[in-house]
Each structure stands twice: as C-alpha cells, then as structure tokens.
Length: 194
Ligand SMILES: C[S@@+](CC[C@H](N)C(=O)[O-])C[C@H]1O[C@@H](n2cnc3c(N)ncnc32)[C@H](O)[C@@H]1O
Image 1 (cartoon, rainbow, N blue to C red):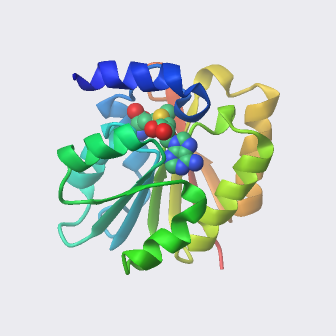
Image 2: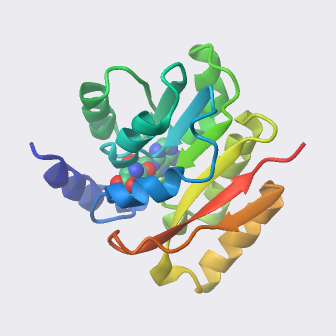
C-alpha cells in the first residue's frame, strides 16, 4: 500500500495519536534537523516517526557511526519503518518508556532527540509525562527539536506548551517558518541544562 494511503488511514483511525492528515515534507525534515548538532551526535532518538518522513533526512545527516532509535506507538507504522529502514532500531511503544528502551538496546543517553509528536492533541497530563520522560533520558547539553504548526501557534494551548518547554529545557529557540510543509510549521530547538 502506498505510504500516503497508510498515513491517511492511520490518521483517521487514531486521530488522538497521529494528529496530522498527511506526512511532513522533506524540507520540514531539514528544518527539524538544522542547528541541533546532528552530525556530531553518537546517539539519536526520533519520536513519532510515522512512516519515516524525517527518518530519511536524519539518516542522511547523521554521522555514519551514530545510532538511531525510532520510537513509534502505532504497530502499522512500526512495521513499515522496519521494512524501509532495516539499519535502525524501531521500538514499538510509548515514548514514556524511553529510558527502558534505551537500556534494552544498550544505547547511551541521546545527544539529539527529534520529535514529531502531536503535542497539541495531547491532554496536558500526557504532555507532562512524555516531556519528563524524554528530558530524563537525554544527555546533559542534549538538543531536542519538535514541530509546531504555524496555524495554531498563537492559540492559548500552543502558548502554554511553549512555556512548558521552557520549564523543561535550559534554552528554547524558534526556527524560521518552513512554508514548504502542509501546514507550514516551525521547530522549537531546545537544549537540556545541567
Ligand atoms: C504527526 S505524526 C508524525 C509522523 C511523521 N514524523 C511526519 O512528520 O510525517 C505523529 C506520530 O507520533 C506517533 N505517536 C503519538 N503518540 C505517541 C507516543 N506516545 N509514543 C510514540 N509515538 C507516538 C503517532 O503514531 C504518529 O506516527
């Protein structure tokens, strides 16, 4: 089945998990992986890879000796990712289990985490649980990049989430808008402190 059909099917059957009607663009993948030191990282984690729109770009930009683990809750996306990218570790499960997954794979604390999780459709309690799990698992000084659609950026839930990022990370910066994405989006680039 073509990837885009699978994506639309999964987004209709699991709207509270997928949170988007179509996959992100390759240009968005470049914005997501800019200015986060991806070429220097030894351990990289991707959260919510879906059918791999960003995975492809991460693989192109990371060092050949780096390790990439993708954490995806949807079993159909996970199966597709394993077929497309046999060279990476795909964990089918929730990001809340990130530390356990890293331990199982004997992988070090990630210096880079790229997230396409649909924060805006999550309840606040789940946002807190997942953000805490991610920050706890990351290396000190590690970089976290996450997507936010421009259409909702100035609404109260998005502003609240932006404040939440500042509570969890030492620095939070905003990328330029990537217009070549549906819908256009920015990424927040965050750095974990001591
Ligand atoms: C907006 S889609 C992004 C897909 C792809 N990265 C892209 O940008 O086209 C969000 C993805 O996050 C996954 N997801 C949602 N909640 C999750 C969780 N708690 N743990 C792991 N993956 C999750 C969904 O199944 C979906 O694949």
